[in-house]
Length: 352
Image 1 (cartoon, one colour):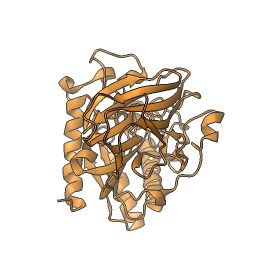
Image 2: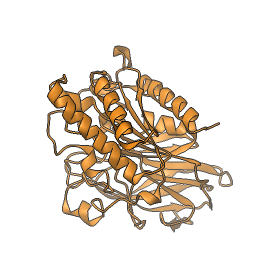
Image 3: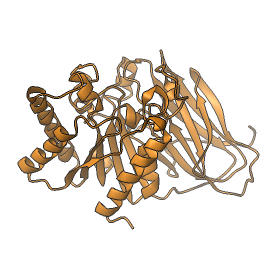
Image 4: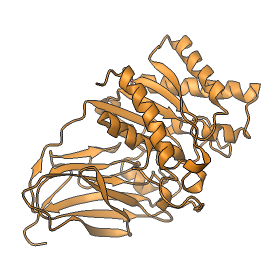
């Protein structure tokens, strides 16, 4: 690697994606879809990455000019990974290095950091996107099922995808930047098995507060998130699938009232931190048993707050032939969902 120069993620021409701290040397990637983007020339590029895990290995995807060129599991420790080599040195190309799996809340050693970039090329600025989106969700938004055969049922990090994912697809369709806050099995009130501590709203105002372990705390995962650093034009909430499971698969008058209150409280929290965002509660990719409850929650929130900048949007259900691994939505289902959301946002945000 003679002749390569080293740069760090504090370089003004390296754009950082996803919620993280202000620290760039190294850059810690917490959430799915987080990473870096560069417009760079040169014949060769390497990335130095630090990783750790106890149970769930980190995965990344490397995209060049919008196409996935590499997808890989990362071993523990510090390693140099070749991003590209033997390319025409004078050509500029867009390079993204993206975390392909969710924040693993049950793995206290979970770590993925970009230490530096080495290349013989030059950097050009990455143009800021006009529109900014935030997606809040569960395993669907984390991209669980986006990789792996349809009959694959093991819960491993390999089945996650940030690319075969409606969030990524929606942002791409609208030429928007996006951030993700999601966790498999979690809901807006409780998890699929009814545990109240596993709900997204409890951690929404932190950078990545659901991560456990002293190292994650020291890295700033539990720090308060600076909402002013990222002004979302739309906040898309895709929660409810696990909440109805936690209720035993059906809703009665008692738990319906509890769920409505929890949803209204969460939208109130989102509005407090995102005063100008359009709030869209989407639901329906894996059944719609909670649809009436969520519609009532959105209506109640709007009536109580006087906030008309919030809606419920039904999503197309995943058909049996559209399932990916782990009986989760597959590629076609995510494409269908991205089409519905992007078409809606195009109209409401007046995107040409």
